[in-house]
Image (cartoon, rainbow, N blue to C red):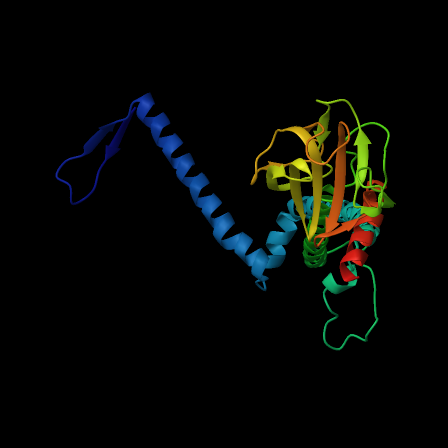
Length: 319
């Protein structure tokens, strides 16, 4: 294809030879430029006009793209409704969690009222109300406020459960430190109280419980604690004394062999010695004592176990 270009100022006519490839490339380049220009005009002029509400252009643009806008609004509405439904489900679960938290807090002795956020200024004292999720057509701002409230409530419940866990762990540790586990399986011989001394025949206070058993029978720690003494005593013979904290300690006497040393940490049920007849003893047995601030108590009351034993220990300490 030849194109002749003539002009009065030109001395001679110019001839342009255009091949098919050049023509196709020119058409494609022109089409690309037109598409880019139209896209730029659409995005930077018409859409801006539609968003900002230009007097003349905005109605025209909305008329042209009304289907697209309607589809976008419908998509946003469906997503907001789905989010609102999920938020409602989260609220229901949070209400159940709060009720459970109040029951568990009561069991742990924690007052949840002290952890709640005080009412805003201007709100009447004692006023209350649940969080509200609009049933139909919630706006994005409403959902954001509700989610923010759920976030605060979740943090409060997390704090409550953390405190409850701490209190329960503390109670668990205290129960592990109370000597309410039998140190030797078997019958009990002489009990706590006054009796005729087996050597002198005179009335004397027996400060513990006797557990008759064969020599070499294992003696177990009645509770966890720190070994204070593991030594020889003229009356107790081979003796082990364990400190359980809060002024509470236990003593295991007349042992044939001691398995722990002073300063060792022991746990409930751990073997600490073997039964024997060392010291002031008439035969193989364990003499088991429970002391509160160094004062002997009736071990049978502690072996009954649980929080009642802890309360009795506190009462004995006050006396």
